Image (cartoon, rainbow, N blue to C red; front, side, top):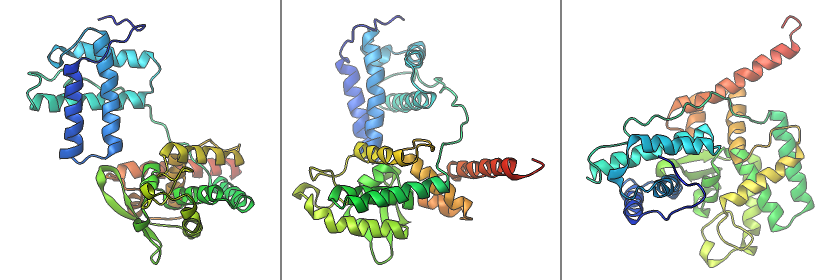
Length: 313
């Protein structure tokens, strides 16, 4: 079915109502995080827009070829394989729910396959790169002792020193910090809570920031650890921008964001002899297989060092 890409029809009410009901189900019955619900809703909105442009107004009109054509259009628009896989997965979950609710007689997405993602090891920082980065951030904070400089240092130190996700960083409340034990309580994916240790530099940076935090504090953000300049809880987009700007200190290294610092922390722990299960718990991975990717990164570095240094390599 052809779609006019130059004109976009509004999403039909029947489709939008189903998407909204599914979002409520995810949030209220499955207790999914706001981030997860927003991701599902965004993917379904993309599908709904395509269906509207194709003249499809009801769920029971959707067929498997329509879903395949939609994915093909996303691919042609340059969407990465990982994003295509996520969107196809969201659609399968949605239609399984829709069938259980009696919104469709047959599940058109049951045979919808996800595109394969090429195996690629994550780009990460070497230990030397990470040390250079943190030294540069510490020096910048010393030169700029304003709340902004102190906060940015704490952001970088916590992301690298604990390996938490940027959404987890921005969601931290003051009550989540156990100063005596040097740990933080983190609410991760699936609203699962875990306790993560802070490195000594991260502890010092957080203490310094908490001493300056009141200068930006507003009533609406009284519980938040990290704040934006206007006093509200820190936006993840701002935290990402802080990391990317800090990466200018090491132009020879890959320009990683907050997740790259998480990769670096895990890889460096394993290179230092940390137990894989312990790293899994710190990262909040449900599956050990997810954590094992970092052992492959460490092995690749070992091979590279061998090839560069061994006389018979």
